[in-house]
Length: 302
Image (cartoon, rainbow, N blue to C red; front, side):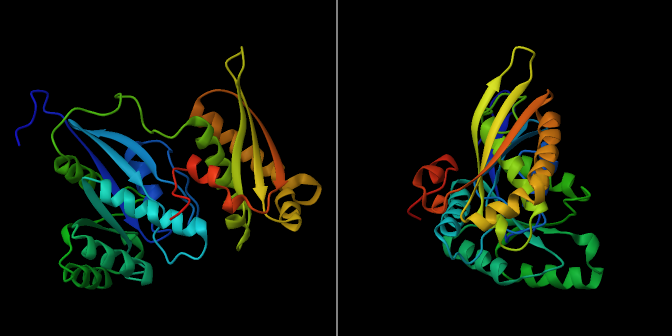
């Protein structure tokens, strides 16, 4: 198909991978700004986030999908369904594999799922700086034998190594057509939702073990002030009283630390002063709240 006179190209690129392989880090690096939260804990991304970047004459709309894993809860099922839907709707699929972890059960599940769907993908081996070259070549050869991948790239999303080559390749793969978003737009995530996600990221960083997966964050108020600043009020919902005590911390120190870190990051992202008020409430059934799934763009019935 001939390119339009402008020579512009535009398309959706779904980034699939097991939890914690570096999908959000890669997309934030491509976009040049934070559009999706990053945490050393797995299953951080709960919704499908679109990060938008321009390379040459191409506008790439990256779909940061939740990690694909064996679901246990309703939220898990909805997250995995969203990931597969993001792949089904995309023009190009990138499978990101942690080169150090290799082909684990979750990665195998994705490979098999792509084969069943008849879709091919670009393979990106991430964290190559942590793997000896012989092991890296062995893993590459094993994955190449799957017959699934059109191209292979070796990258370090954290350090940016090889990412430029991958981005250039993807820009050439998306179809010709007009751009879908303004040139200066980097995401389609509403600011209220972005604020809640930033707060949730800092809670993930402060808390340990299973508690982060028992909480969610909701922006209740967003008030634009005459001096150009913004007041944000957000609620952290947990499922039990003892979880509330953990989130608050002794004398409220933990939630205060989370608030300070989140406010500092939001001021950097929004480029203005932020007044952040955090509250912690118990809502045992938040994981069964259909409205919350709609807000996140997830299918409650998945």
